[in-house]
Amino acid sequence: MSPAPPSARDTSPGQPHLIEVRLVELRQLFNAIDPSPFRERDLDPRAEEFIVGWARDLPRHAALALLVHLERGAGRSDETAILSDAIHQYFGERAAGSRRTLRELFGRGRISLLIGLTFLAVSSGVGDAVSSTFRDSRFAEVLGEGFLIGGWVAMWRPLEVFLYDWWPIRADLRLFERLSTMPVSIHYQATGASDAWRSDWPAMTTAESRRSSVDDEDASRSTTARPDDHHAPGSSME
Image (cartoon, rainbow, N blue to C red; front, side, top):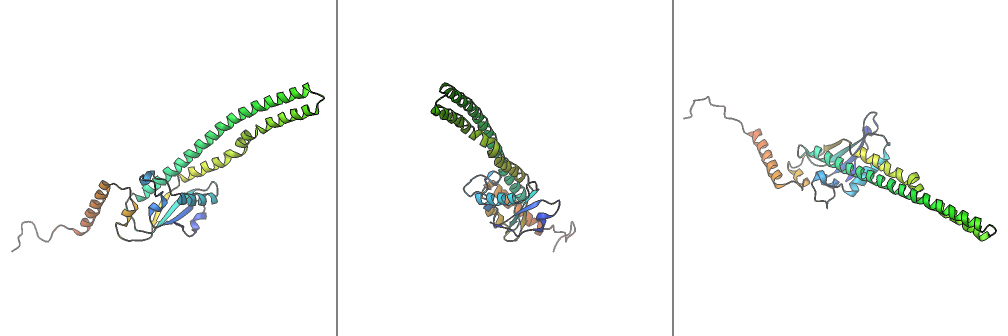
């Protein structure tokens, strides 16, 4: 898998910014150890990193589109639709995962905030009690200040959640949502053997394979077979 050359279409006004990938086979996009069909298969980690990394470099609100340069001839008529569905489903699941992570983070943040506020209140009360009980003691004064500082330290985690931790996850969520709806197209760059695409669809069932072979044979016959119209009805050959 390699990046395609930069395209002038990437910056044309009103046009989506293209993410271009060059492949020998479509299955290079997918995780080789995932036995699921293409529609349900995870993307290869390197392919995902490449696509997401390219998308991050583009303007945050830019429309995106994926163009796959495939170094073989066209295969199944629904090949582009299946690839598009698989990519949309994968990034849709990534968006759902980010949404779930963000929800869980805010849940932990609220619990941490409640715990932190409670501990801060208790620490401040204990510190004030120690300071008022031992007013002339320098040690009691330091101990009271220590309780107060400890209470504010307990507030560090909820403040980190609500000030810093959530926005990178939110940015990923928005990016995955854009990737899950981007148009996907295939540009075929070779016209090799007509059945070269079959090695690209390892999840194809036996029934589908046989049906596709029959369809190919029927299409081949239809281009060569013609009705014998050289003789008028009722004529005979001697």
